Length: 334
Ligand SMILES: NC(=O)c1ccc[n+]([C@@H]2O[C@H](COP(=O)([O-])OP(=O)(O)OC[C@H]3O[C@@H](n4cnc5c(N)ncnc54)[C@H](OP(=O)(O)O)[C@@H]3O)[C@@H](O)[C@H]2O)c1
Image (tube, helix red, strand yellow):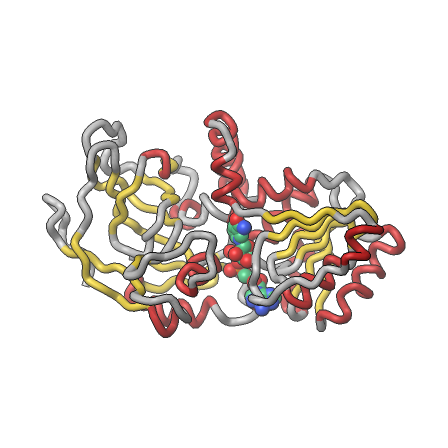
């Protein structure tokens, strides 16, 4: 069943929701809820496509930076079409938009116009539904690292969508990329982006990286894994190097040797996109949006898609998203 025609907003729609935090496969369910009405200054968007992102799953597990208040819908980004507007909103119904708002694993979402990016004709729904999280993250991570041409950047979860985008940006700036992955399957893909691949057990990472960087070490490490892989990557830094932590795929803590931090002057910092966006003024945000749209057009900030599932088949989509060695995103269609 898809949503009833909204009309006055009294129809029902499908929503993937959870009543308690836990493993997504155990706690998510397809519910029927009223189609929301857009109040003054708000916009209702009919969602056409959304990705399965690691942050969606962390949120359901209660391990994300935003705490859920169950029963809660899922999903933080999407592509869709403006369907109805509250008073004072100038967006025309029918406008294609990227959505940066909670609850995108539903048929409809009500959002602020500030949470929407109108999509130009040359940006597909496939790129648009993944526009607001990973591309912006990749651009800001690369800016923050400010690695210089010839320096080495080590990334864990090195075949993720973010890591591939970072790789394209970094390589185009002359930075040398070493991407740490769980196995060798991604080697050819990453070579095509201009990155060297480091694969194998975490205890071999530091030594493998040193074969490339020699005594210099890496100027920067981007860690999205934590645990033994993230800790090993951190040990690859050169004196004065920077560790930027932006994910927690393993769910395990990082172990950082205080001797390393103190005597080798290592800088460690966390990165969370919502917090970074909050600190940007309006012109800087507009500039970031323009950069991300350019990256969507050029392909530099687009992730390939491995499979699409209907919203009602979200459980199958989750199983697929969890498979090691994916080469692209899993999307949920209407
Ligand atoms: N801090 C922020 O603001 C922010 C914003 C966006 C994304 N992120 C984070 O960025 C990371 C990547 O996101 P994405 O959307 O690009 O991911 P993605 O394309 O869905 O890919 C996930 C990657 O994680 C790897 N992975 C999964 N479990 C792992 C484990 N236990 N150990 C090592 N690697 C593991 C997978 O490796 P295989 O290829 O081996 O399967 C895959 O390459 C996530 O941690 C996400 O939360 C953070």
